[in-house]
Length: 239
Ligand SMILES: [Zn+2]
Image 1: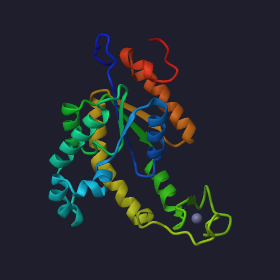
Image 2: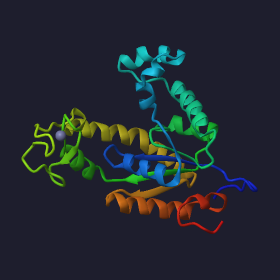
Image 3: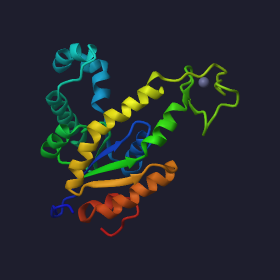
């Protein structure tokens, strides 16, 4: 599916998308470690960075963000383009990006300015996510996560390690989770549809163990990448 660049290995440019709580952070991390793909920080992470606050751009947009507004799309696009080009400059393998592009407008910009090869869509049904997140409890001291159903603490609502009461993040309360799902539907679905029209989407079943999800990703990547890009996927020795 990729055009051939004679004699030159093209970088693999992957976008990862999945509902909050789908486990995408873990998978992105594995892809980064196993395939050597550069990890692109999300716009949110960059915007939260104190150093960024001091830059010209930071000075312009922080008043907005501090008021709880979103940074304008053009600013995010420009920022991410520069960040991705800079981070991947000396890397021959490519990158994986989890937080960008998120909206359709960003996806169109990224396609034109950066070029995206594949979108990995980690699918976990909404019902399962609500189940996962609303049962999640966290230790305020050591930050370890528990799940009241799948990984309960030994003593009810007490951290096994620190013996302090567990808390529920406001983000994980049912109403907040439902709202996050709604935001996801509205922003991610048009983006997925956009890449699907270009035959760039890899759908992965996220409702299985971490190892099985990762194996599925690798085997689907192997099927979908051809020629100049196959050699970077473990288990491909055709090149
Ligand atoms: Zn603890």
